[in-house]
Length: 221
Ligand code: C5P
Image 1 (cartoon, helix red, strand yellow):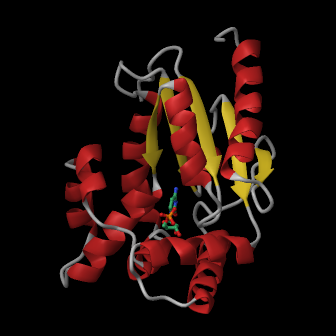
Image 2: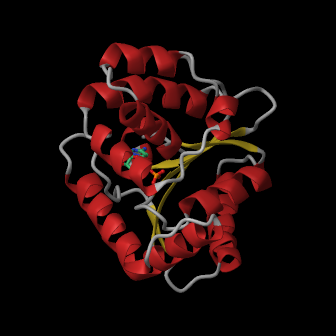
């Protein structure tokens, strides 16, 4: 695959609801990067599976090949059912292969108006952007993640109890960490950020100092 020259690349992995998306958006804004929430693509396929009796690799391939990032933002992919379905289809080697190409292209060939890219997901540091300039593993305790997700659901009027959210996250953690292909793990070269006791702002300052240091070292800043 062709790669654009001199792009800033930030790769983030994290379990669900650890705050990676929030931080990735802040990073994208600060450094003028394209942001791709890779979970959305798995959720999109998970939704396809839930809504179509006919579901096969050909359909997935066709949909992903014609997918525009803008369109992805228009679909509501927040529900817990879609998240569960995403975690199930994400175990499939062939589905991951179809998605990988799309994601690598976003990572290494962002539109010219961007200075680079930031992707978050489960296999970004280990598979999609192995040679990223900055690699982060963002995590938080299961309880804190469940509380954050519970409040998010509540805000959107979804009636899920805290315990249901906790159970669902635990279940998804297990599926994502223990699957055969591209399991979620912290790579040795990723910096660990634990957001359990950190505010969004404090977390961002920590990440910003890591990125600034790296960019200075690379002569970019
Ligand atoms: O991040 P999010 O919760 O939206 O991801 C939904 C699901 O998609 C995850 O639980 C995981 O199974 C899958 N996923 C993945 N690889 C990624 C991103 C998400 O397998 N890079």
